[in-house]
Amino acid sequence: MQSLRRDFFKYLGVFLTAAPFFSFFDAKAKETVEGAYSKFMGATPEESATDEDFWAWVQQSYTVNPNIINLNNGGVSPQPKVVQDAFDTFNRMCNEGPSYYMWRILDQGREMLRKRLSDLAGCSIEEISICRNTTEALDTVIFGLNLLKGDEIVLTKQDYPNVINAWKQREKRDGIVIKWVNLNLPLDNDDEIVKQFKNAFTPKTKAVNITHMINWSGQILPARKIADESHKMGIEAIVDAAHTFAHIDYRIDDLNCDYLGTSLHKWLCAPFGTGMLYVRKNNIKNIWPLYPNDKPESEDIRKFESLGTRSFPAEHGIGYAINFHNAITTKRKEERLRYLKNYWASQAIKIDRVKLQTSLEPNYSCALAIFSIDGMKPGDIESTLLNKYKIHTTPIDWENIKGVRVTPHVYTSTKDLDILVEAITEMSKS
Image (cartoon, rainbow, N blue to C red):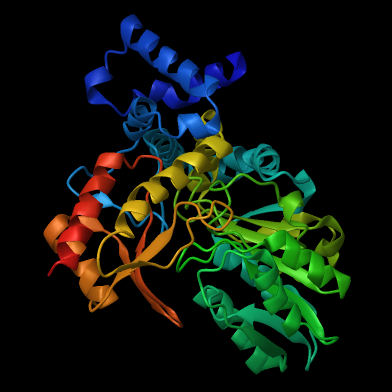
């Protein structure tokens, strides 16, 4: 605990750097926060999820606009001030001498960052590549796999559009065959979910695309069980972890997948345009890099990082986001996010005309959830929430999923969610 406390104060500035009324940072203020943090870390993750005093400190480390309630963190998350400050510092440094500071100084820090990410992800440092987002990470795999005409790939209708479109392009260009699974959500039965994937597998199937958490509704799929079934037939498992990395508590090894892509600017709260690709070590040589280099068949994970000029300030800001995240811990973050989702959703489902399209079972959802109101279009619900109540959400109209997605984050308070519930109640009466 002492080590965690030192990291917390060293890297997060005791959450006070973002609070103007604590700018003096006197001994009394420090003692107060130390006590709050000790209490927080001494509690179980489930107990700490309801510690509103501590989460109020967390809120003060963000610079979100208090005049709007941002409940669309599923799209992209804001960065805590310490991450913003790091980005600004590195950006100013680069502008003092771009080619010198970018390529001779900051470029040398990637290996330590790779180590930090691999520790957080739970895999080898030789299996992590730093990229810009989930789309880039998964496109590296999708376009890098050696596939022949007639080879089959299993997707769901509920996968992310950029991923679907990448596979459709390979289908059109190379003659591969997409086999579709259409999930009727929400689902809270592992066997039922796995069976639908398994039924789509054939001797021609080469890979299965598994969206760990479906972005439209927050449904968590049993990625490990699907991957295990695929491996029995020699099928490689590709995991889209855009919404689970640094959101729910797991290690990549737990998923038994061959490839994984995620965005770090979502739940890790790293600078915008940062992501991560995982490739199992023995598969690296078989994947062609999306951006070519002189050793495309190398077994070195770094062959996937030939991006040309990149944003070094954004890349180096990732380390500060990791420090912030680790000070809270993944499990405590997960439990808080699930608590916030359950806080509003368990009230909303009791309101006339309101339907929740996300399971409240802990294994099948966390922060993201989607609701609808009978007789109202998703776009109308979303616009009313924004224009009348200043609540920012996102309307969903995709395949068989239609509603409004609500996504709180660690800086969201229960008071914010009380306003949401009041708004839904009023709309349901109109």
